[in-house]
Structures are given as structure tokens and as C-alpha cells.
Image (cartoon, rainbow, N blue to C red; front, side, top):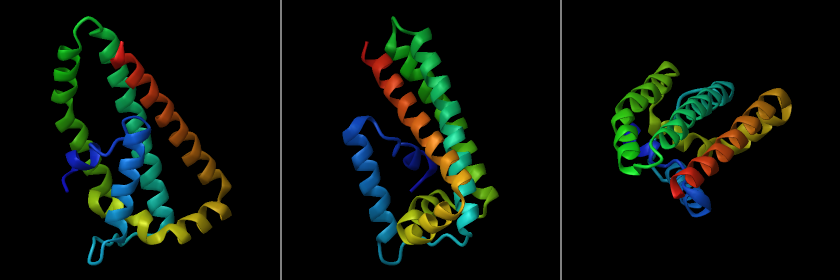
Length: 149
């Protein structure tokens, strides 16, 4: 799975979110699947940085939709042109932690109990992750709403 394919896992509505979760769980529990060789704290840090990138990307996407309200085709083309840059940024993020996109996606499926324990013991990290996750969900809803107009 390429970075672009992982980026495409970005949920689009409730159905999309459910599909992305199922894909992530399937990848995480597949026999012989990728295995990330990072610690739980490192996984949480990469997850935080990944969500921060998503917030930035969504801010840009929302601005593009607003800028090209009259021509969603142009908005889609501009956003598509930005995809390689965004994919390289994701790849660089994962690489900086010594993992691949596939390993990142699969990690939670294989290490859920350890991650949950770590987050229980580190409420500030959990709060940051929960806050970023809520921000991403809200921005996705805003993005989808803007595109639907």
C-alpha cells in the first residue's frame, strides 16, 4: 500500500470512517502483515504528528473549496495536484520514525492493549490525541459540507 493509498483511507462521512476503521483493523490483524518496530510512545508521537499534518491539509483543502466555490472541478484538480506533496510529507514523517505507512496503519491493530495502557498512564498524551482526532473529524465534516454546496 502506497502513501497515497493510506491517504485515501481518510474517512468521508460515517460510512467512510467505518470503512477506514475496517481496513485498518484488517491490515493490523492480517497474518504475516507488516510489523512496526517502534515503541508505544513513539507510535503515539507519530500519530499526533500525523493528525497535525491532517489538520494542516484539511485547512488547505477547506480554503481551496472556499476559493473555488463556483468551480469544484478546479478545486478537485488543485487538490489532486497537491497530493504528491502531501504524500511525500507523510512518507517523511513515517520514515523519521523508522516505519512505513503500512506499519503505521497496522500498529494499532497489533498493539491496541499496550497503546490503551500507555494512554491511561499518560492522560496528557491521550488528551492531545483525542483533541486532534476531534479536530480532524470536525474539519472533515466542514470540508464535506463545503464540497456539497
